[in-house]
Amino acid sequence: MAEKETTKQIALNRKARHDYFVEETYECGISLAGTEVKSLRAGNVNLKDSYCSVKDGEIFVVGMHISPYEQGNIFNRDPMRQRKLLMHKREILKLFGLVKRDGYSLIPLSLYFKGSRVKLELGLCKGKKLHDKRDDMARRDAHREMDRAMKERNR
Image 1 (cartoon, one colour):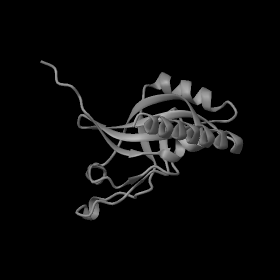
Image 2: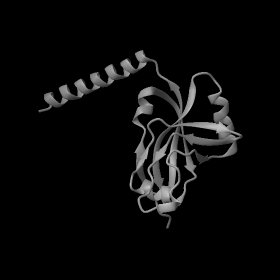
Image 3: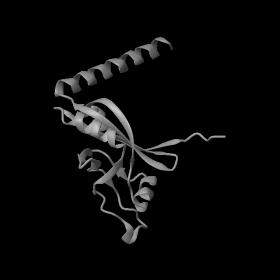
Image 4: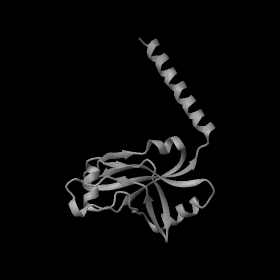
C-alpha cells in the first residue's frame, strides 16, 4: 500500500506576497549539503531577501540564509552561498523566457519537507506598486471588520 507523503513547512516568505503579485507557482528541489539539511530541520533559515537567477541553463537561489549547524564543525558551508535548484530543463527555459519580460522575477515563496526531501516553492512574480499594497491592506481590513461584525451578530 502506498504511503502518503507528508509535508512539513520549514520557512515562509511573507514579504514576497506583500511586495509581489504571484502569477504562477512551481515546486522544485534544492541541492544542499548534509549540515544544511540538519540546520533546516532545526528551522534556521531566512528567505526574506532571496531571489532566483538563471545562469547557463541552470537556476540558482541567491540570498537565502541557512545558519551553520552547531555540531557541523568543518563541514559547515557558507550560509549565504548560491544553491542550485533542481528543475527540468524545459521548465527552466520557460521561466527564463518569462523573466526576460519586463517586471517579472523569480521569488522563493516557501521551503518545506516533502517526505524526506527538501522542496522550494518558487513564484513567478510581478512587482506591486505602493497603491496596490494600500489596496490590499484596505481589502484585508474590510474583511476583518466584516468577520468581527458577523461574530458579534451571531452571539
